[in-house]
Length: 277
Image 1 (tube, one colour):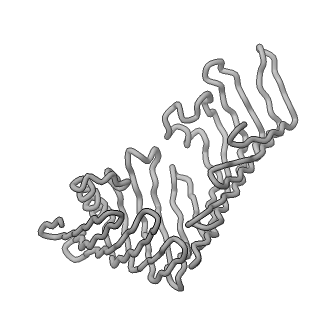
Image 2 (image 1 turned 180 degrees about the vertical axis):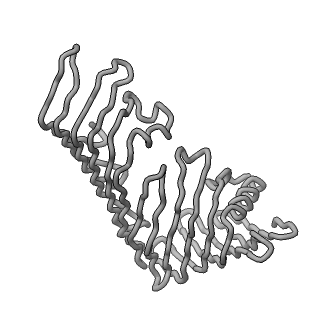
Image 3 (image 1 turned 30 degrees about the vertical axis):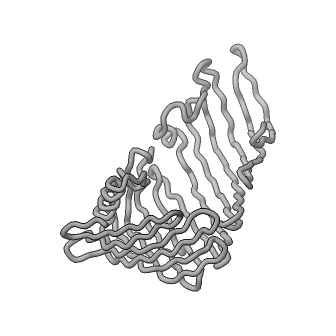
């Protein structure tokens, strides 16, 4: 176990099973209580409880990051600078076939920064219900690189998911500047905006599938090596994923480029693609 004057945490590791019991003091008045049992391997199981009111996320993330370093655990929370408030009082039990849950959680005016996050994430707000053995995202939104992104939907007691993630008017040039240059490979993005909606369905314990529709407006990019421009008034993309495979089709409207200094134009271009081609 680990302890200091304000916080205590105990951990037990036994083969494919791990358990913990922690009382994390995030201020003089506020404490987050966390308890959990996790089983791995062929017989998976989770039993997680939390009771936390008006928890300062900055202090909580620092405590969890410190514990992860002491235990030599590569936690995604390590190095995260979080702000905002957390209210959480819920229990989740699952054998990855059925879900039992109760309680609620709320994230208020939160933000997060990390070396692993290439762009600022702010204005994080979420209302999550765990009542009636299902997880209901009543309201979950965040500004990612100053663009609102919304997640809504639910996961029922059989772990069947019905979720939707969507956003409008993402500035592609602004978004691309947040990534390393090689991310967008051969192109520099000059301008363009993106709308998308992704529907996530299927079972969390076995198979998930997504159906995504993307609309790119007023796209202008330039091939890095040759400086050849590629432009399209609109790009319509539909992408389906299932079992780690994907397929989709694309339509480019009012497409234009250059070939050996001569303009090349097409009213519409269509093509299909998958993980092989």
